[in-house]
Length: 218
Ligand code: DHB
Ligand code: MG
Image (cartoon, rainbow, N blue to C red):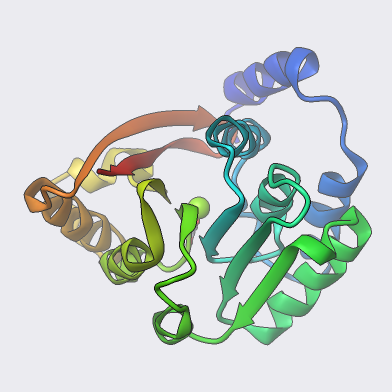
């Protein structure tokens, strides 16, 4: 981690994001179970929470649970009777996430669907719409997840995709791995999709440079 951006996060968060036992527990418990340290950073988690509250989101779809760090931020944003449906490929990760939800006291608001998201997303009924979707799973499948999210997100809803900047590699013609290809394919789709309007907003944190794609389903 770049100490400049560690200090920057620490500085801003010291004013805006108080120490949070449940979120810290989720990160620690995930690390103890050998999971990768790739959750959204606290400033991003809080932004997702604030956006969901700003929209009055009652139903949120997440693709890529991992240890449920962002899921907890979302679960706290939805009102009584709302829910977060989150898709996780690995049962081992889902189990850690369930324990993290229990510790955070949000289990009653979260439903985890375990298995390949490309399959589980297809089982979601299109008459129960989501207000907001957050895609943060394997990057090669970004477009697949985006199209499936669109099927179950309401008009006027929002679809956010994580990791669309990747330290600038997405725009670097010398780089061509499945991750950057997955992001480029999504951008190409959105360029031609008249039903959505979107922007990329770069982010920087101790994890380096990355960004969200924020899209509105018109
Ligand atoms: C990776 C995945 C993520 O969703 C992220 O935010 C950072 C890194 C990864 O697969 O390396
Ligand atoms: Mg991510």
